[in-house]
Length: 284
Image: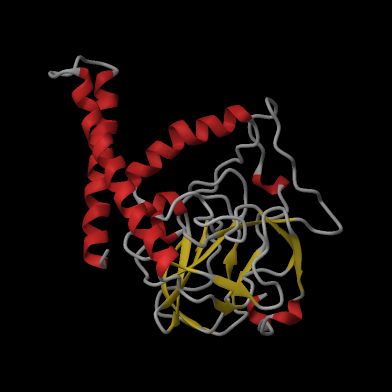
C-alpha cells in the first residue's frame, strides 16, 4: 500500500471512529433518529480499514522484510524490555503508527529503587516519581536532525491496578484516539537519521526536551527525559525506527542496539555510558 493510500486510509479510519464515539456520547442523553444497529456501521468500517492495512503490513513483513538498522541505545543504566519485537511482530499487537518493530523498556536500577509491581486493587494509581524510569535521560541513538519535538502534554499518574488499567483502555484510550496519533504517543520526538530512517521517542516527560525542530544532534546528545504522557500505564521509554516522519503513513523498520541487540520481553540489559558518544558537559 502506497504512502498516499495509507494517509487516506488513516484519515477515513479516524473520521469513522470519531463518528462512532460521537454517536455513543449522544446516545447516552438522547435517542438516535435511526436504528441502534446502524450506529455500529462506522465502527465496523474503521475495523475493516484496520484489517486491510494490517494485512498489507503483514504481507510486507513476510515477503519484503526490511534489514535491521544498527543504532545506539537511547538510554544508559540497567533496564528491561516489556513489549519487544524479539518476541513477536508487531510487538505492540498493531502495525499502526509504525509500531511494527517498536520496543518498550522500563528502568531496573541495580542499586534500586525497585520498580513497583502491578497490583489487583490498591493503589489504583501511583505517582510517577515512584518509578525509576521517570526523569531518566534520553540520548540520541545516532547523528540526526530533529524533525518533530513536543513536550506540552501532562504526565498522568501511573495505572498500577486492574481498575486503573481498565479505565486507561476503556476511557482514556478512546479519548486519545479521537485526539489523534500525537495524543496516543504523548510528548514525543522524531529524529531524521538519514537514508530514509527516522527514530521516534514516545511518552517523553513534560517540559524536558532540550532540542527543537531543525537542530542537528550528535550521537549521545541529551534529548530529554523519560515521562508518562499519552497512552502509557507507567513511565517507560517507547522507541521505534520508521521509514518516514509521519506516524500516520510511516512503516516500521527493525533496529538493533550496539552492544545490546534486541532485548526480549523480561530480559534485563545494562548500557554503559561509555557505549554511547560522550555527553557534553552542558547537556548533563
